[in-house]
Image (cartoon, rainbow, N blue to C red; front, side, top):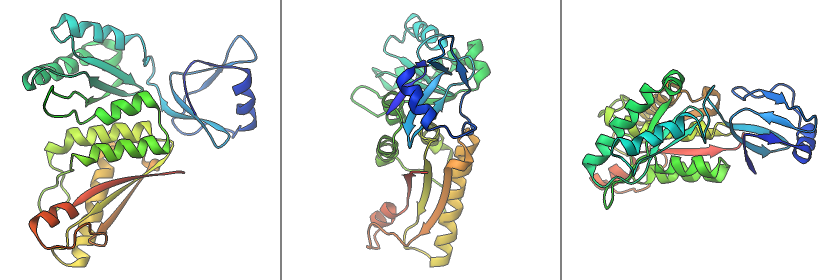
Length: 279
């Protein structure tokens, strides 16, 4: 069960007392006692009651509100700038641009305007938010962060986090330079969306699994896949995802999806998979 920030009163407070576990987990916002001694006020963020404890699933950035303040002010400016179709979700340190663009050109202009607006606002500029594209084009391409936007509204559970990773990767692939673990810059937008999912799902452990085709020696493929998994992990950490909630595993060619030796089979077998695991 997930809760938005606000005031948590008597019935939930009783559960909190039963599930007290000493110091809050790393990254969790502080708990402040409200004027009413039967309630506690939680800092901005998304919380989940799990295993007898109220966990901070997504802690808000200092001074930012997920439903008011800079989000509303910036979004109001979109219409004035000629982008009435564009929306914005601020969740903790994530800035997710939403809405359906009427054309590819309109989307490109909207993304640029959205980033400029976030950079110009004193609060969002200071918060160093992670900007994610969740804008589809009408009748065309999907927004790489659409599943992240849905997760931000639904709340993080083991099932919703896994669904967000799976649906994001269903139509996208992380691309690497041939024969090494250097990530292609064209995959940065996808990795930013994946970083956002991992951020919202920080109450769980996310395994990054890399797989190769059957081409090449077994030991070479195993090392290459591990190096690539480590590279993806490093990217996510660089975007603010907690290292403690990430693991990276290179499976090489041990889990082939297609045992054929065709180029199409090789493409299917080269893949990145994300598995969400209960801590």
